[in-house]
Image (cartoon, rainbow, N blue to C red):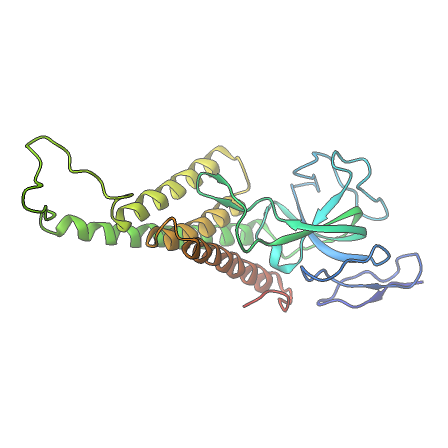
Length: 279
């Protein structure tokens, strides 16, 4: 019997064999049922090559999972589209879902960090390809990478403008009796002015993104999407007390807001409904 479709878009799943069941695109939250199949999205390298497991997926009835290193298959909902962007986007059917974990691709400047508002992915024991999302083309990938790069550059430029104002100011005032002898450095206050701290963080993010792209370490879309999110987080954190827990939460929200912007961009350009993506 055919699968009874309950989906947020036109997903060609008619004609599959097996008992009639409900199947829907995973929203990114909610309880998982092992007896309920779900649809989700998965990024693969060109030729349907898994970027993590280094094997080729096959379209159709072949299930993957048990033979992988982890023994599981992971995929994301609409809100998780900006994470791990690659050459091809596929709709996959998952069965026997076992849990939800944060996307590991969430990174801050300087390395991985678990953000306070993490996007999640679903993990299942088995999965198989349903169809490729043909709207994700090389041209659209370049447009997305350029959009994310532009947003990162704008934050770098804004930080440079703020820092430039410091250079036009008069010499910093030093309290009477505390002026150092000639040739003696003035002790730094904390991490220095916020504007300079922002420049240091944002230029570092931009430099690392350019290096990763030039060396082909990741797909360009993934590199600049990560840079855009990290730069928004860094810009928010740079002007706040770095030891303040509330400031850290503000930076986490900024990161999540940028990822949501990316998810909406992708969903709109790919022709996917984005009801599951929080505003």
